[in-house]
Length: 315
Length: 315
Image 1: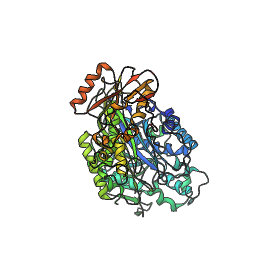
Image 2 (image 1 turned 90 degrees about the vertical axis):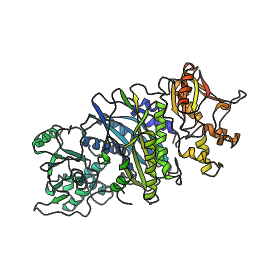
Image 3 (image 1 turned 120 degrees about the vertical axis):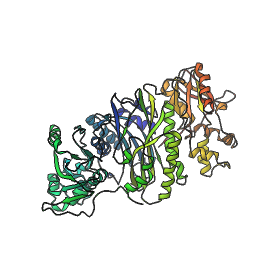
Image 4 (image 1 turned 30 degrees about the vertical axis):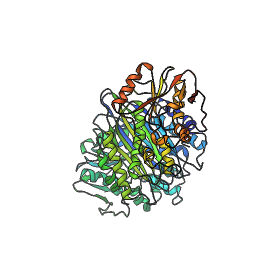
C-alpha cells in the first residue's frame, strides 16, 4: 500500500466538506448557525466484534455512520458532518480495492444523509480493523431529547421492525436461514430514522442498539419509571415471523436495531403517528409507562415473560 | 472486569462536563459562544505503535489529549472539551488499577488545560489497546491558522527543543541512555503550546508530529515555497546534546515532538518572541522561507545535509 498521505488523498479527500481544508491540515473547523448547537455521537466498530471480516466493504463505513446518525436522530438532531479514524491491519488483508468500496459506501451515505467528512486519522495495527466515527448533528439550542423525562401515562413506541439485525447476524453465521437476504441486509445497513423532528412530540427517545428490553431498562432507570411492554405488539418483520416463535426472545434482546424507542404523552400520539407516516415510516405502540422502576414484558394472556438474556454488553 | 456501564461510571463519569449529561445519553451537546466556532482534531493511538505496553498508564491518555491539543494550538484555538473512544484487549491485561491510573491522568490534564469529557465509546478487541480522542478548541470565527500562507521572507520558528521524544523512545527501547529521565518524559508527556494566541502573529503554524523536516515539507508543499533550515540553529535539549552529534539526524527526522513549527513575517518577529517569553516558552528561529518548492537543511558551512529518512509515515 502507498504511504499515508496518498492513501488519504485517494480515499478520503473526495469526501471532505466545508471546514475540512481538503484534509490538508491536522485540524478542521466546525461552525454552528445562529441559534443552533451541535449534538455529538461517537462509536467504534471492531472487526470480528461489530462487523464480520467478510461483510461487504461498501456497507461497513455506512453502518458506522448510521449507528451514530441513529443516536443523533434520537436526540432530535439533523445530520451535519463527521470525523473518521481508521486503524488498518498491517498484514495487508485490506486491499486498495477494499478501501475503494469502503469509501464509495461513505460517499453514498454522504449523499443520502447530506453529511460530509471533516477530518480524521489513519493508523496501523497488528490486529483487527478498528473504525471510529464521531458524527455531528445540528439542533436548535436547548432542544436535545433525553432519557430522563418519561412519565407514567406515556405510551412506549418503536419505529420499524425489531430484531431483524440480530437475526441477520445469525443468518450470516449460518445459524438461521433467510433466502430473501432481508435480515442480513438489516444487519449490514441499519436505517437511522433521521427524518422526523422529535422535539415537542415525545417525552424521551433513544435508539435501540443494545437490545429492545435492555434499552427500555435505560429509559426506566434514567426516568425513574417502569415500562410495561406487550410482547404481542412488538413489530416483527415478515422475514422474522417466518422463522417462528422461537426467535421472539432474540428479537427482544438482540442488538443493532438502530430503530427509535420513544415515550410519548397521550395527547401527542396522533401527531407522532402522522409525523412518521409523512415519511413512510411505520411506528408501533408496544407498551406504556407506569409508576415503578423496572421493565416488564407481558404476553397476550397477561403473564410475565422472563428473558434469559436482556441485551448486549460490549465487554 | 465489571460490565460496560459500571466501567464507564467508575472511570469516566467523574470526568464528564457540560453537555455530557453525565454520560447517560448516547450523545452529547456542544455549544459555541457567539462569534466563535470550533477547531477539531482527532487522533488514534495504538499500543505498540504510538505507545509502549509498559508506558505509565497515567501518561497514555494525557499523551493522546496533548497530541490533539497541540494540533489545536497550531490552529490558534483554545482547549475546550473532548470525546474518547477506548477499545480494550479481551485478554484482561489492562486491569482495574491500570484504568484508575489512566483516568487519573486524564483528570490531571483536564485541570491543566481546562477541558472536560463530552462522551465516548467503550468496545473490546482481540488485539492491542486502541484509543481515539477527538478534541475541541474554541476560535473566533475565521481565525483558524493554516499551512498554505507562508511567504518568502518569513522566518521559520520552532518552540521548545526538537528531537527529545524520538530520543526518549530509543532510551525506553534500551538503544540510548539518559540517566536524567528527561528524554523518556518528553516521549511520555508532550507539552502542547496552547498558551499563546497565534492569530495575527504568524503566517502559518503546525505542530511537529511527523518529524521536523517532514513537517517543514508540509508547509513548503501547501504554501508553494521552499524552507531553508539552518541545522546549527535547531534547538536541542541538554540531554540531547549530551548524546553527541550522531543523534542530530534523528532529532530532525524523529516524530512526536508536539512543538510548534511556525513561519512569521519579519515585522512580527519581535512580537512573537515577546508573546512566548510571557509564558516562559523558548522559541528559536531555525531558518527562512524562500521562493521554490523544497526543504533544504544547511550546515554551519553552508553545505546541504542529506537525510536518509525525513520523517514518519504511519503505515
